[in-house]
Image 1: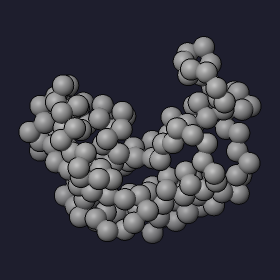
Image 2: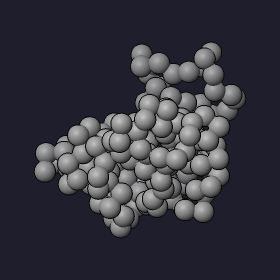
Image 3: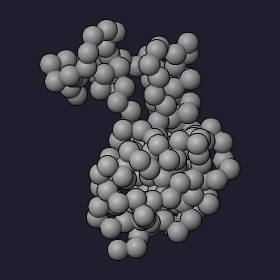
Image 4: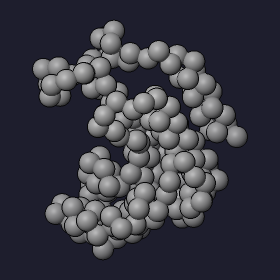
Amino acid sequence: MNDTVLVTGLSGYVGQHCAAELLRQGFRVRGSLRNGRAAEAVRHGIAREADTDQLEFVELDLLADPGWDAAMAGCRYALHVASPYVLAEPRQASMVIGPAVQGTRRALAAARKAGVERVVVTSSVVAMNGHMTSGTFGADNAATVRDLEWTPIPFEQTILDTAASLQAVVEA
């Protein structure tokens, strides 16, 4: 199989596991990094799980247009798993929401322009454990869809705007 899959956020846990599985199944993987200097460390991590001969890297920024069209060119599929991840509470929610939304818009627009057949967009782990203020995340304290605090969003309008914005990209 020679189909190419763009995997954004390749330096992250989910991105590396997705890339390893795709490589094991015979796909070519083009992985995005914020900084190309991380490429060898990422390659080394993935190489513990899969042969990396069909792995290549591109630099992409969730907040900037350059590179997205070229990265998506020739890809049959895309997995957009890049999302901001912070260890401390950001000063403003927009520091996390902005890059997540803008990156998703860029990924979808580039995929549409390149004729990508299927795009998978994931969320952030924060969607599951963002309600926690201390302790260790695990099965005993994972949020469920039924938990009222699963999505403690005082950003209802942001969510509505985001949905409309992403729909506009898909329909364009």
